[in-house]
Image (cartoon, rainbow, N blue to C red; front, side, top):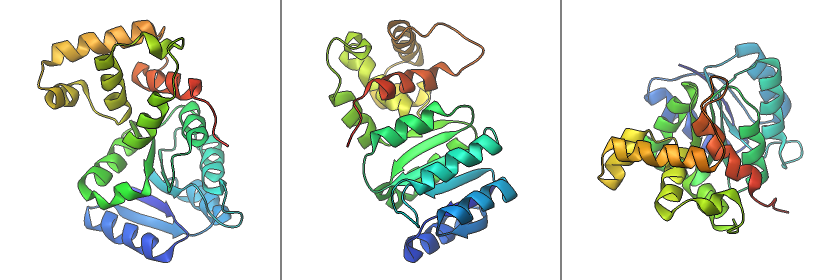
Length: 219
């Protein structure tokens, strides 16, 4: 599986290269700034890109902007964004840019090697992976008159785990209940969020996007 890495900190960039290589990935390019990132993504068209939000020259959102531009030029390019902080606007913008696998993780999660590598693989396979801390902050900021306010506490927990990229079976295992019970919860979530069956979009992604779009923007 071919990977492009964008990280301006040399130590972390080298660590990501070593880690992913050890797990069988081929790192075709590792860069430390946004212009080089865009060139690498368009030229190599990797199976997945692991990208820091804040890159030179401005250290604001150059990494994300380069990723979004690359996805415009290479539709469906899988992107896993790494960030030092919970930045909701970036998470919403990335998920809004369909199709293709997307992920948003805090850099601290790289230390949990198995989960990080699994997240990279899920995004490469076209899945959606959101950091639990991002989900927690988003869910905690919703008022009861928003669509999510209609969800039961268990349905909100299920939605949170869906956003982390867990399958119904994995969620069922987490709660020690049947897969059929989780299927009922997910169907209730889709109904309450106004997401009818569709061949055009993945409803799990749309459900996650629903509350990301409803969350207030941060300064």
